[in-house]
Image (tube, rainbow, N blue to C red; front, top):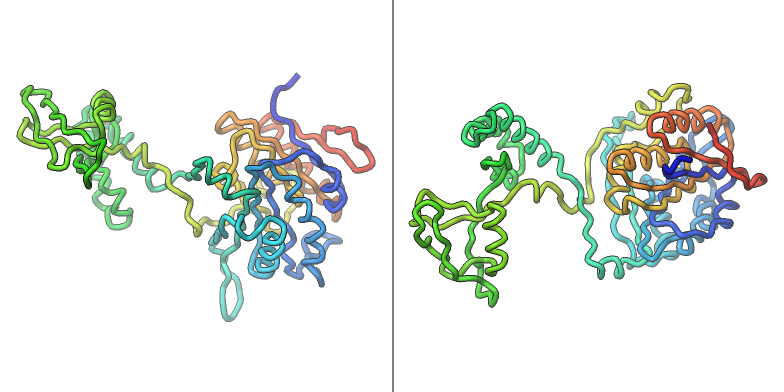
Length: 390
């Protein structure tokens, strides 16, 4: 019997399905209708005279369906973002609004006055204060840092493990890129004897600190004491010993030079997420590569959702998607599980209108099951026993 995470698709109106759910979820992703007025699929038009009236009885279940550390991420655009914020403020509290992310997807349209290229990801917590109290910090990989680490690794291999040769090659690669990379990153231009990319920093304490060390360090070649910073080292004796053991103190040519601290780029290759990011839209092109799947207007991007799901939720998160649509959330969870060995599970709700299930969702589920090996079950509201979709 398979031990892979099993995902579930509930077929029916989410207004009805949400009322039947009882388990709490770590992450609820909302991709509600944008109220564009256009046709989404056959027999379904994205037009609402009262969008708020449509959404309110569905969103009312959110507080009940979130774990205490639960997060809501909602995709929306300019048409209804203000109404969505009001609804979520009322239900979850304005004080639990984590932030609103602006995703510039760089789509060019034919509007005469303004080419709108962005969407929003509105993020709320069930209890933001409690999450902060745990010391939780969200981090995301810095693509530019990853590029530099890959270049350093390439230089190390090309230099056959010689630090001087690898550093020379890396600096040659870095030179024409200094003008476009952040200055803080370009300071990482040294490669040590282990092939690690690093920079050096001042080891002195910035101010009077009770825990600082004044212990002199002995130069590894001359065996004599090196100069100690005027205010002492910026770490205590125990931290100094650990950094020495890990090779994170760089000595000069002799004992007359004050040692420096080595800051490894690998330790700083992530950063707190920024509220604005730019990434080309790939959802439609990605779905077009799924064998047998019909076109679906504006399917969400796997990479974009994976980036944020991975940021805000653990690798065993229970995820709810009440507006499953083309099934992007299912694929995101499977892709993340495949990448990090996680056990994320998705419960999705889809309304069987306009052949969405037959023409779009079913082929995508078959594709994902074949690629990732994680089963998906489905149940209709009048058939509670799950059956495998594909």
